[in-house]
Amino acid sequence: MKLTDNALTVLTKRDYLKRDKEGRVVETPDKMFRRVAEAIAVVEQNYGSKIAVKQWEKRFYEVMTNLEFLPNTPTLMHAGTRFNQLSACFVLPLEDNLESIFKTWNKRRP
Image (spheres, rainbow, N blue to C red):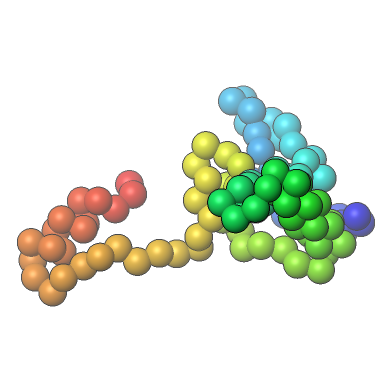
């Protein structure tokens, strides 16, 4: 895998790479790709064997490190972390009345 200097700067400055409590980067791009591949592949447990999970993990890792495909920012930042939010956006259920609007407003993430 060969990332440009600019790509490495973005990964570091924009918090794609994990940091410790003091804010120091503790993850390399390779480790980020491995973290993401493992987190994405784990869903295969619902459909196949542990062997299938490892096969998909390897394939996801390969396409990312070959720069054939990169997931969206939330996936790169959060897959395999405590937060684990992989969607860029999502819709909360909302009815067309004030009660529902305020109920939904109170459920939003601060």
